Structures are given as C-alpha cells and as structure tokens.
Length: 422
Ligand code: UD1
Image (cartoon, rainbow, N blue to C red):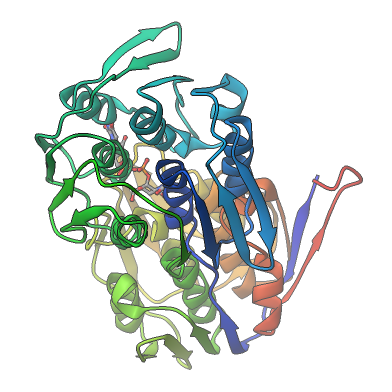
C-alpha cells in the first residue's frame, strides 16, 4: 500500500510544467478507434486511467505503445466490439468507448460502468442520444447489447450538459450519415480538444466550446499526430498548493482562460495571479481570507473537480466560505479527513461551510477519491507537523507524480510504496 508523507510548513518556490489533460486524453483514446490508422498522441499523461484505456484498446485488437511522452495507437487491426466487465470497471469513463465502437463496428457489447465514489454515475443521456441516432440498445443484467447497422444524424437535445454524453454522441455521429447537432452540449475545453483531434483526423465537427456541437457524419478519417491540451485541474491543484503553502509558483503550459473561475477565487482570497498565454504565476504573501460562496457548475462555471482542492486551501483562512456542490451527490467525502487535520467544516446536504482555522495539524488521513486526495496533499502543505495520506491509488488516477511536482516546488513530500509496488 502506498502512502504520501508530507512535512508541512515550507513555503513553495519554483516552476513546473503542467501535464496533459486526463479528461482530454481519455475521450481522444476512444476516438482513435474511428480512424483505422495511427494516432501519435503527444503529451499524453501516464496515468492509471490511461493504462486502462490502453488495455481496452489492446483487447479490441488495436496496438498501443509509448514513445517518450507520446502514446502511439494504431486501430487498423480492431477485430472485436465487446469489452469485459472487468475492463469496464477499471475506469469510470469507459462508457465513452460505446459511441466509438458503435460508429466503427455497427455493434457493441459492454457492461454498464456502474456508480463511483462520487455517487451514481448514470449514462441515461448517452443511451437516449445513441438511440435517437438509430442504435438499438438492450440492457441485460448489467450488460449493454447495442446494434446500429446505420446511425443517422439528427438534432439531439441534452437535458443537461453532460461532458461524457456530449463526447459519446460526437463520436457516434462521426460514423453516422448526415448532420447531427447536439444542443445543450457541454462547453468544457476538453470537448473542444476532442473536436480538434477529430478535425485533425479529417472529421467535420464544429461548435465545440459553445452549446451546440455540429457533426457532418460519414467523412473518411485518417491518422494524425496531436498534442493533448494541458490539464486545467492539475494546474488548479498546483496553484492552490502555492496559495496554501505561501510563496511563489510558476506553472508552464497552463492556460488561465481554462481555469478563470479558480484564479478569480484565489485572487479574491488574497493571492496575486499573473498569466501569459502559456503560463500562470501565483504569489501568496499575506494570510488567505474567506471568499464569496462557491457554486460548482458546468463550464464555464466553477469546476466540481476543483471544489475539494479550493476547500482545503481555504481551511486555513480568515473568515467563512460557503461551498455548494451542484454536480455530484457525494463529493464532500474529503471533509471528514480535513477535519482530522483541524479544519472546521460543517456539511448540510449539498452545502459545506468552511470556517477558516488559525492552524491545521498533521494527521493520518485517507484519500477517498481522486480530487479529495489531491486536496489532502494541499492541506498537508500548510499543516504543522507530518501528515500521512493513504489511498494514493485514487490520486494516481489523475496525477502523473504529485510528489515529484510538489517536491520540485520545495515541498517536503515523499512517497513510500508498499512491497507490491502499489
Ligand atoms: C466529466 C469528467 C469529470 C468531471 C465531470 C463534471 C471525464 C473523464 N470526467 O465526467 O472529471 O467531474 O465531467 O465536470 O471527463 N448525468 C446524468 N446522466 C447522464 C450523464 C450525466 O444524470 O447520462 C449527470 C451526472 O450524474 C452528474 C452530471 O450529469 O451529476 C455531470 O456529469 P457529466 O458531465 O456527464 O460528467 P462525466 O462526463 O461523467
């Protein structure tokens, strides 16, 4: 069992590069299926969920290998359209393979992704949209048996702007006939990155980043080389780390326009944030102060993925900050762990009230989910004494090497791996 051990109290100083975005790489890896050729995916982060995608691609008959920081995928040899329950459960976003496999093979047989540590993770909007495009989908004991000899483009309206449903439907629509428009589409930057990848393969997709994405289906796709966008949530994590610990940190490769709500919150809390096209520098010299309420919302609102991390940052601040979580039902599990470190946080339903503490202290805590785990690392930086964080496998789903990154900024942080390497 791995642990991360942090000695709190050092201020941060230095510069680090931000890794490629997990939430871009995963749908793009599913999309590689559409082009029957070779994709050189540069800047692809080396993460557990990326490894899970590689296992799915190989199981389907595709080739995938690392060349430096590029993942090279060749989907010419795809020879099956089913994914086992075990592979599906390895990664929450495996549902995204459904649209791609259907578009390529006209059928797909995979299992329901099921719930996750953030609460239920339904895919009803994905399935409704695919049915509207002409797929026949039967649900049988947790398996989804899908056939679609023809997918036919049409207007689709999502009842809420789901990121995964927008991506799945974009991929299916690429393999369909005619024009598909997806209204109330998610506007996350990762949707735009998926569009850019698809267009680099020869697809005709437009509108990503707005509420209507349009796909002209049926274009013959080819391989390409593509660079994944920087990870805005990882960037938010390291900015929050510098805000919590104090000092100055420069993130290269990060784009402030992708995380403007997070930098606005950090400025309001008393940090100085300066940004160029490709980097962000945060300086924190005075005590942090409470800020106006944070309401998580679909992009361009405040990202649910940064909620725990900002909450940890403000656990030691002057005043009271209210957080309202509007995307997932079970996303305050980090609160009990932060409380062990001396944080004063009260939860009622979807609202958490953070009364800034004067000091936090080291403790033995457990990551309950990916961003909750990152939040504990952030809190540990400003706690007095030593914090031991278990459940590191959650953090590994989204951070290439959080101990190396924070260590490069001057944090006293190390990882101890158990005998099984886990
Ligand atoms: C993606 C991100 C995740 C982020 C989330 C919200 C990836 C791999 N993951 O997840 O990090 O936290 O966006 O920004 O990109 N919903 C339904 N029915 C559906 C689909 C979604 O009710 O068919 C609900 C979900 O339960 C949730 C909300 O819609 O409450 C948002 O989900 P969605 O935008 O789909 O998130 P994901 O794509 O799963």
